[in-house]
Image 1: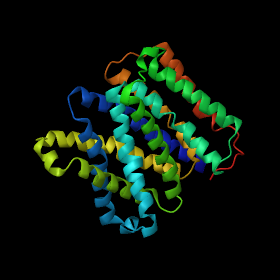
Image 2 (image 1 turned 135 degrees about the vertical axis):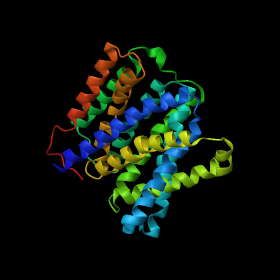
Image 3 (image 1 turned 90 degrees about the horizontal axis):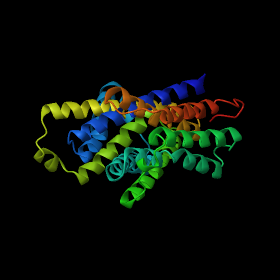
Amino acid sequence: MKTLRGYIFIMIAVLFWGVSATVAKYLFMHNIDTLIIVQTRSSLAFLLLFGYFSITNRAMLKIHIRDLGSLITLGVIGIAATNFLYYFTVKETTVATAILIQYTAPVMVTLYATFFHEERFTKIKFFALTLSMIGCFLAVSGGDITTIRLQGLGIVTGIGSALTFSFMIIMGKHILRRYEHWTMLIYAFGFAMLFWLCINTPVKIISQGYTLHDWGIFLLFSIGSILIPYSFFSAGLRLVQASRASIVSTLEPVVAIVSAYLFIGEKLNFVQITGAITVLAAVSLIEINREESEE
């Protein structure tokens, strides 16, 4: 039951991530700057969480000084870098390319967990990983190889986004052994915010002349694209293995293409539907062989 609850939490996170990808694309189409979207996602999420727990449960703000380095790297690398590298890859290549490269992360997470003896590598995991990679390719490319553009700086940032996303899952799993997921998120978002303030200072932001309407959009996007999904994902990550959580996260491209079809009129062909079904099969496979021990 605990494991099932973890999977449900991760699937809810993936649902929000997938829909928010469509919303982000809509914002880009209306000339909203990529940097301000990435920056406000984590910054506003931090302010909301910090404000809430400062009033309701200050114990969530307490950490050991020895864990400060881990939380800083999670915020800067796992949150800030992952978001920026992903969106930069979208800008330099295509959405399909960015998604496909980033969702090689389950392979990296599984290899890490196996090499360091944190998890057992099983046939079920191998088949699930294989199916999820094939399914992601079919879902995001639609069978058209020309949508995948491995060129220029986009290759570097795409690989970087996969590495940092893997790091977020692995480091997050380690931190969650010592802290509640709310504590981890408060500090991760907080350090991501401080990082972005060094890059894009308040003076620069004010000079852009964003309206209250703009800030309302930024706030809603922050809640829907990072606060809610990261809260559910980290809660789920406490309950399931890191490799399994990463495989379930490959449902995000499926949600993204379906939401793009429903809300902004993008085409959805038979190959993409086949890819979506393949990813669903991969996610189903990881629930087979229940005798495998969970952390």
